[in-house]
Image 1 (cartoon, rainbow, N blue to C red):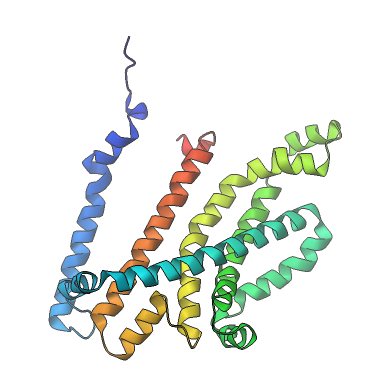
Image 2 (image 1 turned 180 degrees about the vertical axis):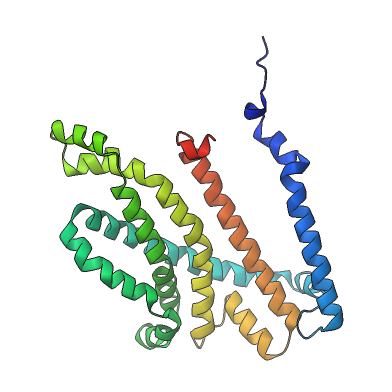
Length: 266
């Protein structure tokens, strides 16, 4: 007998094809395009015509593809370094109140320090290569991942933790079997913020690191200095698309990894 599908068990593909899913986004984009066109028609020095932005992609798509790949590589390396470092620190401070009192105030100070101000010092220390960009990106994503990971690792059920202690479970067992699974929703929430932020970090570093020759940040800097608004907004559109795709990837992975969690079953 064929299984009947209720509204809650409809296939995901059918749900995505339903106008209720995609129509609001299409209408919002159409409204944005209309407003953009009105502003561009009245003042082309504020916003270029959309046709001019589109021409940049068709005239030299390789320019944006090459520089987008450079920026994405810097962002992903910085994200990896910052996220792994933040998670290691989160494990340490969740296991030791002494380390928490020693490390967390310094993390807060690091978070409120303008990263842009230290980019020139990083360039002096590490040169004009990729290293300063990775460091800047890692610093930007470090604090959100640290705070969410720390909260997740410490938000374990007290009754379950007591059971682990009654059977003399080691700290490693508690971490692996209890704290890590409990922290996954918080970690994915942090990654939804950190993935787009990694692009911001890479762009900021490319803006500030004199001597950069590749990357969308360099494309924006050079184009803006030559008053090429079409190229500037084409590069910005690339960044927006990359950020949206990264967020989509994180969301899909989260749904698969947390299919057991109540947040994914509502």
